[in-house]
Amino acid sequence: MKKPMLLLIDTLEDKQVFTSSLIEGTEYRQCKFISDTDSHRFNECSFKRCSFDLLDLRNSTFSDCIFEHCDFSNLEFDDSRFYRVNFNNCKFMGSSFYKAQISDCAYSNCLLDSSSFSIASLTDVEFSDSNLKNSSFQSIHHKNLSFKSIIMDSIDFSETDLNKLDFTSCDFDSIRFTPRLIKGLKIRYDQSPLILATLGLKVE
Image (cartoon, rainbow, N blue to C red; front, side, top):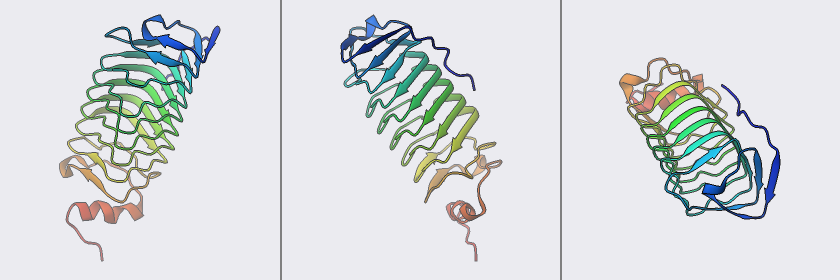
């Protein structure tokens, strides 16, 4: 997975910023972003504890950025594109990435409860030490997708090919998947009864 290509040369703190005025190479701290365009582009910037309330982020582009302690809860990223972006300690509760294209991105220590990645394309993407409870990964296309130390209770992988995915470091009490697409999934021994129960089988 490629890391963000980011060279910071300036800092802006505690300001209201129009999204059309983003400056490459800037670290934004505790700023509030206001939409003044129909298509947003976030490129080569760092964001710490920033507010994106009420922004419509559909069909936006994010490249070579780092977001830390930002709250994106209930926002829509549908049809957006993400390239070499890191999200650290961010909130995405109830957020939607429907049909998004996500490449070389990392979600670390994030809250993604009830988020949706349905029909998204994920290439070289890592979720680590995060909460994905009640989230949806229905019908996604993926390559080099990894889940490390994830809470994924009631996660939904319906119509997604689980081949080469590894859930051994994850925890879940239930999981939804399409039986014909489970071949190749790697799980722990203690997780097998949950998978078998979903298939209607009992272990005695």
